[in-house]
Length: 432
Image (tube, rainbow, N blue to C red; front, side):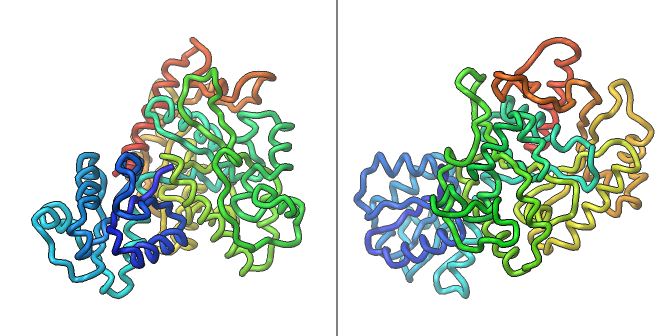
């Protein structure tokens, strides 16, 4: 699990605990030693596992050998420093050279702690971007993209990838597991509904939210350990790495029928908080979504840093992308809107179609309602029978469903290269 490391002196405990509580409320994990004389080996390991370091700048911390060792370790690991001044400390030469160039925030600023949390949160989200695969037209290959492109991403580029099935039809889940397994997971609440409402994963005496269609639980709940919720798609005999799935279920369609706006808003807030929490366990989170503008769509859009819209090279898919862009602009406030990228799927292998060529040249920008030509990925996914989603064979491990790991011949090499190329292009975009 990744976290923000808080470097402090033993005299900074009041400020430390205030910041810790603010980070906890924002679902950002942190690590700090109980005092500035704690085990150095444990502190070094915590720094190595961190995505950023908060340095509390005080008269005491400036003199602290432990804080100096923390900052030196962070610099050696190229870790981002986020200093926060808590008193009128007079900086020594080391602090002037290593910390002051990054120092922009202090407790004397209006909303200083809030600004600190916002900066840490931005670094946290860059550490693990969230990407929603979405088009408000069905049949354009969302489940194929969610499974095959990001399976190839994990294989070729490494990292820890989490797939989240947000479609009530849960086709992504059924691409890896048979329906009996998927339904058993839903019955135990080891499924996506546990991101929205307090469930039997959180307390044994709770009625499953999947059984309560006429009411919504707005009671807060803590995230359960990753292993209790996710399904590991890469077993012991797999090529390795971490590719996990939070399985879907039909029961999340209940939110489309709920009429209590205040309760829905709290359920959405719980979902966003859970996604932010699980960012600490992963390097990428991917949503497979339903093709309708619903409550689930809004949840996905507000959680996502980028939307990837698959489309076929035809006017019908273009309408779905146009509507999607309209929903993003109208339903998500300006500061939280995810970037939109578009991927041509099921294109001809031999040559570009007239539609694709025209779209890349800007001919459909006006009809799309935005600069489609600039949003299009340079790479595209060819039409292939290999990419048709198939039910898993009995007894076959989930990872065998990924083309990057399974089968030979029949044009598979070219398909695999396309999948990896798309993955690399997307990785460059989310890391920019």
